[in-house]
Length: 150
Image 1 (tube, rainbow, N blue to C red):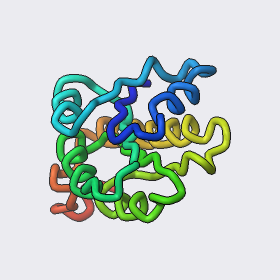
Image 2 (cartoon, one colour; image 1 turned 180 degrees about the vertical axis):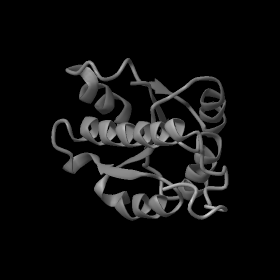
Image 3 (cartoon, rainbow, N blue to C red; image 1 turned 30 degrees about the vertical axis):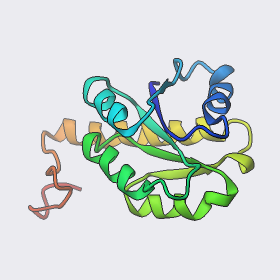
Image 4 (cartoon, helix red, strand yellow; image 1 turned 60 degrees about the horizontal axis):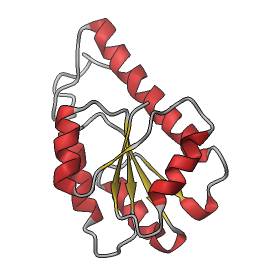
């Protein structure tokens, strides 16, 4: 599994994420993007199974950044990694297109891995369903032809 880590790392989220993957074979070393432009460039040139977005700054324009990440990698799941004090920002990010969130201080061992596995499995099931029928959903995400897809 290839993971892109994006966002603020004031609370050493990158180290915590690496520790979560240390005892598993699910992930190669996660790749860290220093800013939004670098994350977008990586997403355009490298395939990632998921994005972990670390939230630390309340004034970070998180919703806009989630929307921009999803515009580049529409099918790549985004997991918001947050602290208890930034929980409302993570909930708002779900409305902007993030797939789920994990509160670092409340996460039991293995929760992040299980969350990523579920999202990636869901993504592949979705892609396989459409690849076997030969009919893909439109890029705008709307069903413009009712009855064509499930």
